[in-house]
Image 1: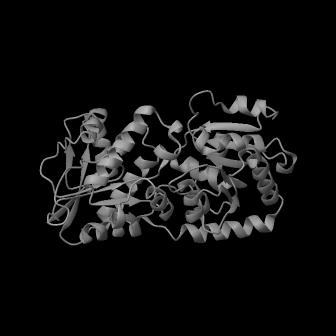
Image 2 (image 1 turned 30 degrees about the horizontal axis):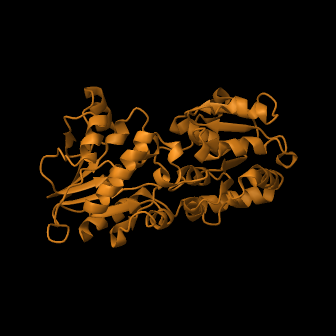
Image 3 (image 1 turned 180 degrees about the horizontal axis):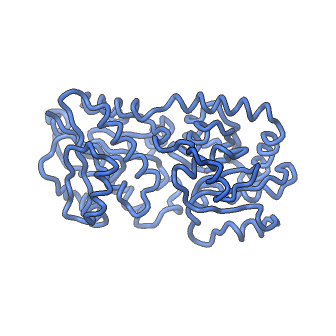
Length: 379
C-alpha cells in the first residue's frame, strides 16, 4: 500500500486562515478520492493533545498522524535550513511552503517525492504586508523548492506566470485550484443569525483583514462619493494591523457613524448567512493567489464586484463586475461607479447571481484532489 503524507499543520495554527482551510478541505478530498491500495496520513508539528484530538475529529480517516517533536516555529526553521526530521521518506504533499525539502535524485528516485504549494507571490510583490521574518522565510523556502521540490502546486495559472518571473520551475509547476468549502452552507436558522449579527436589509459585504493589499481602504473611501449612494458596508474579518482602523478611515472619508461596520471573524454558518443576504459582495484586493471569497459569494448567488487582479480575473471569469486597480488615486471613484451601477439595476444583479452560481460549479475539491493524486502518480 502506498501512503501520501500530507502536511496538515496549518489546520492547528492559532489563526488557520485561508491555508488552514485549504489544507483541511484538500486533505478530506484526498482521503475520499484515494486510489485502491493508497491511503492518506498527516504530518503536524508538536501540539497539545487536545489539538491532536481536534485534528482527528476533523479528519477521522487519516491512517496515521506523524507528530513532529518540534513545535511549529522550530519546525519551520528546521525545514528552512534543511533538517527534514521525518522518519523515512516516500510521498509528501505540502499544502503550503512548509515542507521537508532535501537533496535527492529527482529522475531516478521516484518513490521519494515532495510536492509543495505556493499560493501567491506576495512575498515578492507586496513584502510590506508580511513581517520581515515571514518574507525571509518564504523566499528561503522558495529557493529550497527550486533546488529540491519534485513538483510545485499553484492555485491559478496567473500565479504560475507570476512565479516564473522569480523562479523557473519549468514543467514542475501544476495548477490545482481551490474550491468553496464543504461547510459553507446556508443554515436553517439564517433569519435568527442575521438578526444576531445586526445585518441591515440592504448592504455591501467585504471580507478580509484591514491591510493595504486587501484594498479595503479605497473601498471605504468610495462610499463617500455620490454615485455609490448611501448603502452601508459590512466588513468580515480580523481588525487588522498597524495604524489602519475602519472607524478612523470612515471618519476621515467623511462618512457618518454606522455607515461602515466591522463584525470580525464569522463561523461558516454566519458567513454563509452574511454572504447570501448581501446586496453586493465587493472584493477590491490588490493582489491575490486565488480569491476564494469571490467564489464563496458567487456560490450563494450574490453579485460580485472585484478588482482586476490576474488571479481573481481567472477565478471569476466573466461572472463579476471588474474594476481596474491602476491609477490608485482614481480607484475609489471606479469602485463607486461600479457599486452605483449594480445597486440601481435589479435585473443586472439577478443575472449576475445566476452567472456566479454557474461559475462556482466549475470548481470542486474532489477534482482538485484527483489532480493531486495524478500529480504524484506522474512523478
